Image 1 (cartoon, rainbow, N blue to C red):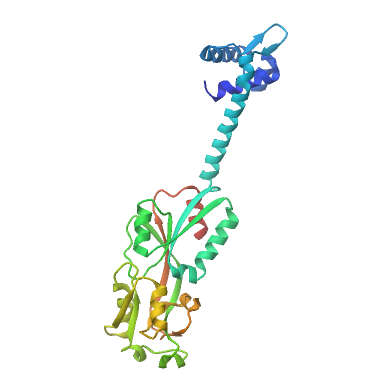
Image 2: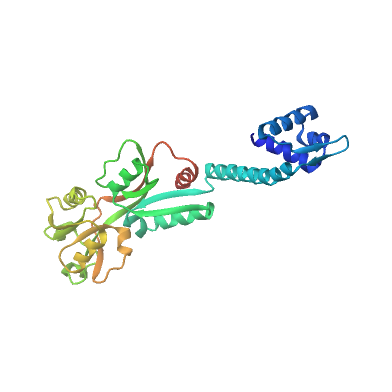
Length: 290
């Protein structure tokens, strides 16, 4: 018994006549009669009482009408769901992000644009360090990641695209003597203690950026695993911190941000995803970014 048998059966039940049902189905009547007999043989029950004038449902036939309708409706629903998912109209997109993606407004703008175009797709957000995002994407636990490019070595199986580029600024306590200036030179902060962000356990990335800025090995006072914890120590006056320009939009009491010299390197925000395997809603999201 397959869906075709059920469609043929319902056509005969609704028309009450093999000839009219055959016309409706665009097949010849003998073929329809043979299909109904095959269905009856498989079920071991007579579905129609046949006469020269009409065809009437038996008790077994009336029972099958209800089940056949339910089965065909469920099959149609399953087909529609899969087709909509394949077109990217439904499904789930799992997105990893770092604070810079949120502070810059890039992540929220992308989410708003995607939701406006595909409102039935569920968006799952997970705040994750860059290395954790790569691992989760490669293991299939995450679909897309927003992370910084500095100090990162991206797996060859990942597609990487730049979605934002900003200058670095220096954060300091509002009580720091340099806080009175609108901008500071690299020479002015060369001997200051720094609080660096090292989400993945190593401070090599920010240490290298500071080395490039200062032209010497920086004094590292603290290494913190999150931007907010680094800013907390900065607010307490325990050192300076460098941060991409969008982070300056995060209002932290007692913290001020000052611009650095023009030769400051840039901070890039990238989106990463698996090169292969994107389909449906995930593919739609990536197309939106392009």
